[in-house]
Amino acid sequence: MVYFQKMTPEGYKKIEDEIAKLKKDRPHRIKILQEARSMGDLSENTEYTTAKRELGHLQSRLRYLGKQLKYAQIIRAKDDGKVNLGKKVVLKFADDEETEKYTVVGRMEADLAHGKIAFDSPLGQAIMKQKAGTTVEVSAPAGNYKVKIISVK
Figure 1 (tube, rainbow, N blue to C red):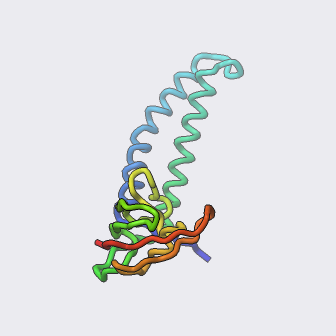
Figure 2 (tube, rainbow, N blue to C red):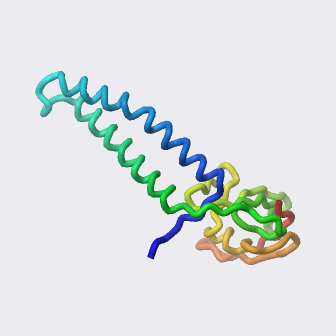
């Protein structure tokens, strides 16, 4: 069974951009490794060890990101008024007077500091497929709480 990673078109583009950046940096990393190797004894050559490790990290990241794109399922937001991937939502937590703005994204794109919540997080699961005006209960590890969906765009 193949597991597809749901993501927004923006998340897919971000991964493509990172791959392009890493591929552009790879020849430079290879050159550094070759120069360090030419310095002689490899057993005591910290420049060689460091360059080899950094190139390995770069190659590993490229493989990882490549798999993310290979198994990506791009979800485009529908204009149906319901919370879904790619939608922007305004939420009001029951114990707070302020509202919070979030974009619902795929797991790999989630970044709470930038207002991006994963659709499969406890909050994301509770609000998915709901319309503005709905109050939902979120079951989170730290306890349950209520959230009202103010708007969905």
